[in-house]
Image (cartoon, one colour):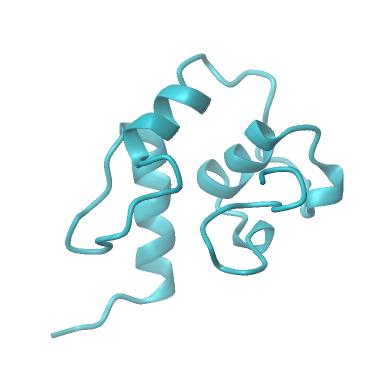
Length: 93
């Protein structure tokens, strides 16, 4: 009865990135690769080279993996300007 709000969607994306699956009651949509595939692809190794620092825009990202890290792990929703759940479309085509 209570519609899902933006924070719940963002929280669900962060949880899916860490544990490999999100809450099906929050979102019936899959991430671009599916949460488990995305987690295995991007977060299978410890992410010591990426940090949730002051990077705020796509021009500062060095790779698609870094963009996904900041989008999913750090919650930087501004990287997804067209709301398609793909950050930095210029580097993550």
